[in-house]
Image 1 (cartoon, helix red, strand yellow):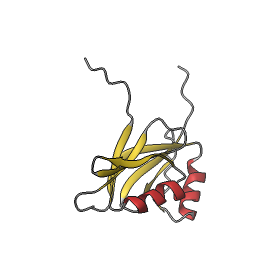
Image 2 (spheres, helix red, strand yellow):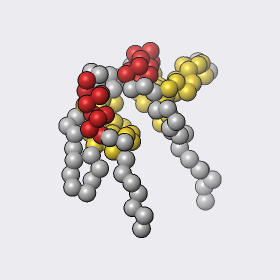
Image 3 (spheres, rainbow, N blue to C red):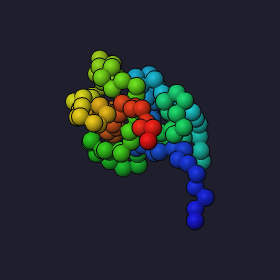
Image 4 (tube, one colour):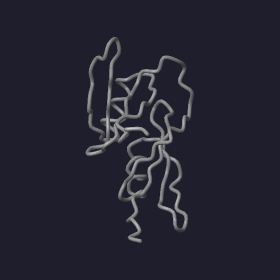
Length: 127
């Protein structure tokens, strides 16, 4: 039996940490949780304000390939509004998807090709 209780940080490979920081902080509005030296490397963590889990923007040691699905889903209160805001802000966004019985969602890419999904928060079923 494990004693693991939570997820703290998810690593994302980036080519340039300063450029990635500018995107996540200035374009997405994430807060910087940590930016310092750990051993012989820069450790950079960002997160949406108030989020439990952060992203570690790790400098890639190899070639960065385009369009990497991260498996990370961000939550918003209104997917349509967020879709418009990101697109207007110059972020590469996918089509806003809305199927019956499924929360509206869309993808967006960071400048390094990391792909994320934004999903509209739905009220929990009280059953």
